[in-house]
Image (cartoon, rainbow, N blue to C red; front, side):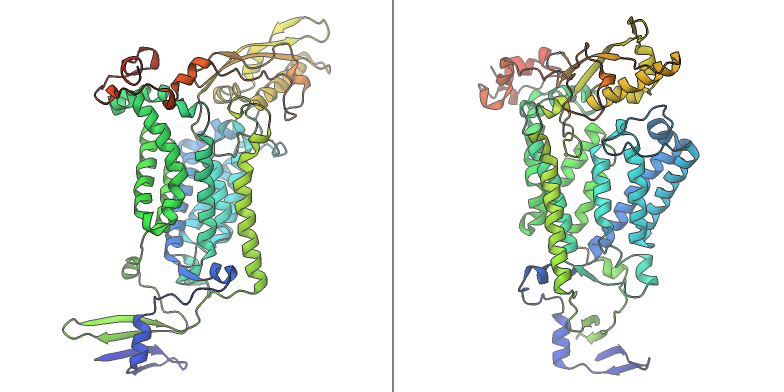
Length: 541
């Protein structure tokens, strides 16, 4: 028996027997139309909306979790890291942000928290996402000592989501507002996310092609510290090299493996292994959750339609087909011409948007190559460049000297310097030239206020740094008045050049090893290179 149910124009349900052609059309409704003739048409081809709706929900939960981390314990994290500080360390270009009182700051965090729930549930989705981007950007750029690549990535992705139709399924908007619900979205929704993922992973790979990472630093010193938690494997120097080169190769191929369908399953497996391993070994916050959530774009979610059946769209009808000996099957027939339509101008705007978006994220992180010096040392162009977990930079402020402008006498001002900042800020600013400059200016101003003078108080910092367990080297010129130089006017004349790369470290590169392979059967308990038998006796001879 064949029965057809269709909503007639007068509101009554009519029943009729579908023709053979109708059934054929229903059974082949998932077949793609002929290839689009132009890029503009291809970008507007319909694709399944479910992955983007699920991604919105998962991403919204990540935002909720991050906001809650600021709120819990009576806003402890927000106050100690951002708003309860005597002096803030600003980002370049965001010095103008007005200082907030604690009640105002708490209200801003709650505002972000509510907006995150709006994103998750799809309530005024684009408005909620825009509100979150504005609110969390204020929080993020308010204090530079807590810079994290993954929080910058969070803002980049949220800004992108604000223009994407991720609320067409599984959202309050799709049930309340007419015209929001759709089982498909235009293809450019996926393309723009693919472009972003390619840029992020690609730059993470090229950033690892540096003189230290290729000799397994800093992993060679980081991993042994975690042996007591994860076993002696982390103590093997060979494992440090495996993770260094494995991480580089993974970042280089991660996006292509996921985007190209024949290799997608391998890409998903490597993605899960990479991010779960990072989370277990390094405890890097919400970054693994952020990247793992994108895997829903690359898996088949058709089973969700059996759990949450989609409502019928305009021009769509449901058909019950009797199958001999196998009960009934319900299929849906969609009218022809359900493509996402757009004018030529709109198509050109989308193409321009994707090209501009891709060009920015492809080129902006490379700017440090046009600045003088080594980026890991002088920090010029380090921010917003996807340089993640690439260095260990230990710095020490040995002394802070100030000069009394009335007498010309020098005196130690380290206590005054430290009093301007929290312990976390001190830990962060020791290795950042712009923050050291901010500290010098803040100390000079504090001394002026303490002594009630309007004269400039010179401040000199003596800072030493060790980059990736190399030689301890002087970082600042202790004879230069840092308070007399503008904070963001760099290159800084008081910053010392990076130390030369010692010749003896070239033997740490794998292509300079004398391979004996005895390390395969050596499984020592581990330790740093100086007392690691694997390093001296096994890994290379």
